[in-house]
Image (tube, rainbow, N blue to C red; front, side):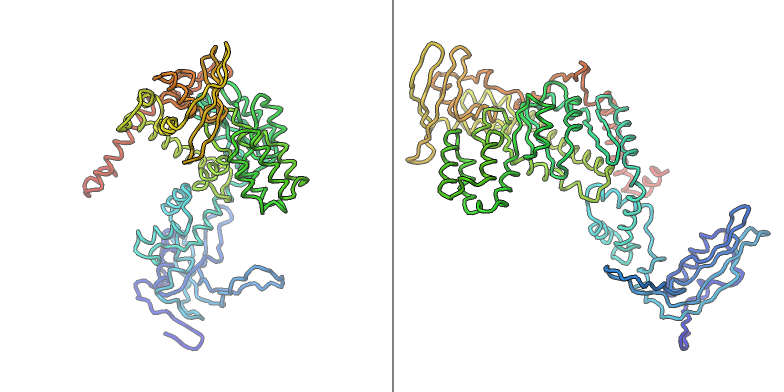
Length: 587
């Protein structure tokens, strides 16, 4: 029924509140009135509440229309967009009173007349009281967030599951607000939660290492047992990413030294940063410090006057095999472009021994380009981490990212163990390495071996200790590249000035040509680097206290857990196929 300025919703009498209606609790009252409001086309909220002074029990409560009252006006000017006013001073309400004799809540007041139009059926689910983020939905959202699925995609998935957005039960903003509330509860307690988490991990395995410094900021270093053990096998080269923070390295490298089993790395790759260079020189004096080329090349584009010759610079940096070739080409470029006195170019050239490939090939780099420092770290983190994560969320997501990476490694190990590559033609040396190299390294070795047939040797000079050879490598029709190879007779080892073996840990094509010339059919041990073998992770790793670093304390527990998890999964799948099985498993 409707009159001027008044609206009475038309709802069946069974759903309409009546004076004297009794309820066991306030929650039942709210649910009943909210159900009526949904049919009528308005939203509700709790208004005034009276409680007993002695017991704190609710004795009187009012539930009102969501348009009750008026919005407070503010004279303060704000830049951000203001929300529209929804209050109209509506008088519709439901009043309950606690009747002690019956221990029930009784309806003592009900006004069904509104001063505004009702919301239509297709929009009523958007009103606040008719939106409900259930506990299961919160858990669902939390799980989706852990794998970095954004809120709008979470809502889209739910829409498909329930048959439309109107059936989801909430709007996207509700999920954002919930996430914000959860984050707000954690803020200020991050350090405490983090320490509890690390202590729990250390309780599971005493090879887990961590240390925290808490002042105005939280500085934390941690390394799980598997990472420490991996360092024992692959610690030759360490890549250090500082994309998001470029200060305060003293504590970091000191803790790194304490955590690592064995010797410091032979090489560490970082951004070019004065504070970091100083910290590394103090804490890791025997480690070769290489700068990230990706980071330096980005600076080339930022500096005035260099952009026009950038492509020439790149060819000089990447294309020169020896120090002499690089220096000659660099001098030619800066002279022809009038950049001889460019201050930044002069300063970066003075540091060439820390970043130019032809200057650093003498140090083992496991084949990693220093540009991979940024590329690989960014790719690794991007699917898991975002800037809104709390410290605790970051740790959890980092562990998940690490777990994913380790699973890929496990799959690669499985392929190496169970699949042997088959080729129509294979030399005795290739056949030998097929049984011990990993698949990826074997492919690299085979490429070098194939290219070795394009190399010709010429003895230049020899004495009692060594032989010196000139190597002609045909790279293109009519194009020959010259290399120099020295054979140390005492060590019975060849050294090539391309530094391919020193850089990759795999014999270069020139060394393989030399071995073929000497009719060596099996690759000698002094050309085989352990980290590239299928058995690279076999062995025991000890920390600085001569204590074994183990992946897990009790491997049998993990095996049992894995088997039980598989059985549980099979039971659930079977139970889902019939109602009887579902009820049996549920109970």
